[in-house]
Image (tube, rainbow, N blue to C red; front, side, top):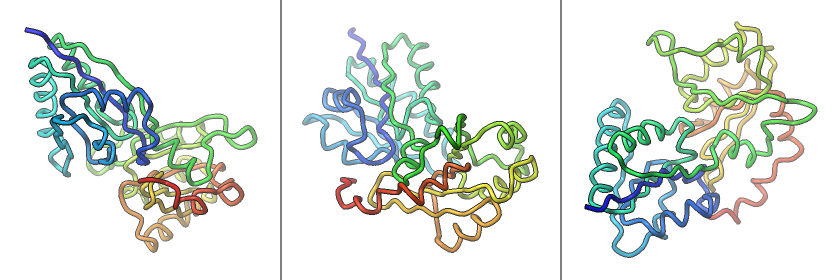
Length: 256
């Protein structure tokens, strides 16, 4: 029996043109493509005729069950001798559970490759005219999961280190937890007037950006009805948007 191969591919942040060349080649050559909710479905148009397309979207409260099924499918399809692409939004190893899938493949003796993708914590701010680092404003940058809630025993962040030691912080999955994030940063030493940006549906035609401070962003986001998926970006670099924002002018040229 010939064992196939699995490619764990990052689809990028939303705009289908932002996938890597190698990621696109994996899509074109695969017999099976398992794709996530946040991977742009337009990328599936490049799949070869007859390729099996399997949606692996996750609903709240069902992540564990669905992830186990994804593991089963990766092994099952590869054991049939097929070339499989696991197409994941952003980068497979940035809050994408790609490492867990890689471990399953190793445990089953299935060859695989990881194909990095552009992660939204860098791309969405860039499209909003905000660099995550800047010689005059930020020499450190952190990517952080933002959905952990203390009342549920899920907050494992070192808030003091984040508030006092990191210039720019990108919170993933943090919109619903925005009041807590802002409160914790202020309590642990970040100035209340620190600039904050929320970038919704980054790099797509649906992208919207609002800005404020740790004190004001909650009300601003609520009024604008900003919702998931969105990146919460905290840091002085946010002020640069006022001068170098570009996306709004050119977004008609963005194919997404």
